[in-house]
Image (cartoon, rainbow, N blue to C red; front, side, top):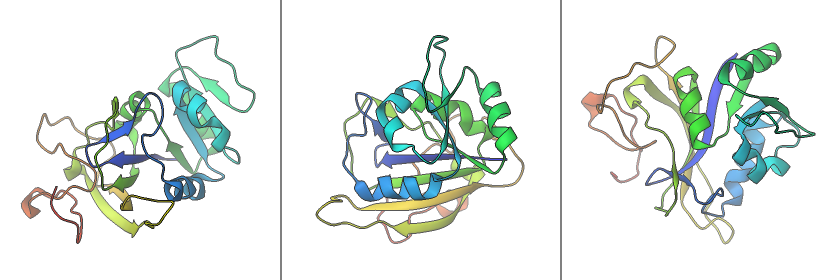
Length: 197
């Protein structure tokens, strides 16, 4: 089983505002659908309530502390261990799709990150957790479309964890934004032709 986090992240690390994404980017929603279709998806309760209607065609696991929460089209789990047991029985690649607390819980277990990096800053109350980028290498990058329906430059970037499973706590060193450039000696993923952040 491979655990992968998938998220759209603004240039200033914002991923949400008032329980919603603070941008309208249909191309990213289509990318999310294409990448996760047919795969198990783990989300928190608030994320499920916000995007649950868009998760058809996938086996959905809702991680919540609310013992009374029920849903007709998902499996409810109450901790990370339960989520791993249920998704482990399915196997393959398992996607974690938010929100922030769920990302933070699964980040130490993740082997891949699918980051849609949006080249704009947004106001918001939810941010993607800190990633120690020296633990990761970029394995693919695709420029998303910018047109009348998709008003922001954005890139679909996939990272894979280097070496041994599991990240080590390293304090402040290595913190940064997904796709942000760092001096070459640090080993942090760069942004190709994009300007430094």
